[in-house]
Length: 315
Ligand SMILES: [Ca+2]
Ligand SMILES: [Ca+2]
Image (cartoon, rainbow, N blue to C red; front, side):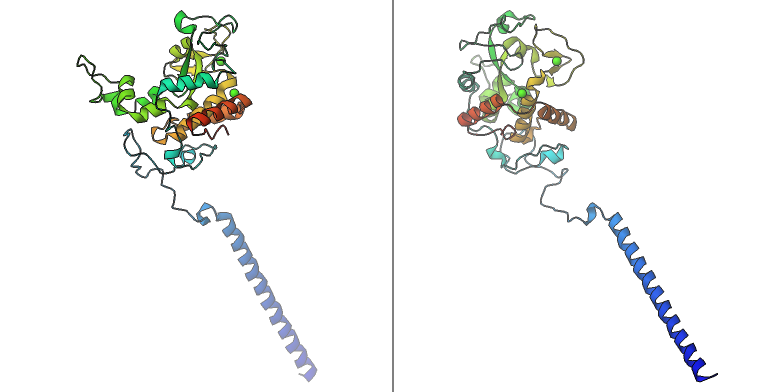
């Protein structure tokens, strides 16, 4: 073989080796890229650092339950617990609810002043006088059955007093303080009012109280908020339906009611006043469909001025 042919063969060999190395490097690079892409596809929440500061949903919560003893001072996150999208402010629990107004009767007096420039009942929109009498004809209200209570305004608990009262021992079991002058023991709401300052404060929380036609208040009892089929009118033109232990309020106050429930659930978390995700979803929808208006905001601020705590869902 001539020198020229030998040099040519060596050159072709070197070029071949170079091409092989290049192809292998390209394949390795492609493989690595594929691998990275695959890693991205499977990378999910597990790659996000898991924080352990929030208590687990199923962790024991020593402050839960009906005992009105030590106040619950930890923050909590019921919005995530119940699957809601309206966030609960992380205010310490001891500063959320009413700790100032100690009697229901003083709340009622305060609320008559708060509503003085807008004396309209909540469910039916009937006007009322400082004397608490209602002009039923003006609002085309028709009495269903209870004439004396239909003619007077009463302050109604939007979240019923029994919803939290039933979780207080004095209500369900009685208390040594609950003995009549004739020696007879009693329980229920009267005993909770006498023996539980925690119940008194919750019952007197003005954010949860609205003026209502007494008859509607009487018929509502402790029934839950709901959407009912049909539009029966048992109270004249007033768009409120009460049946099957449920109440459907008019659309104009559904957001106000939702924000009251959210407030009560947030302010007094151990009572779980929005008991499940379905109710919470309904209230969140109501809150969205009936946003805060100027009167609702004005009223909440007046209540906060007197009572000392805000409803953050109305701010
Ligand atoms: Ca209706
Ligand atoms: Ca409204």
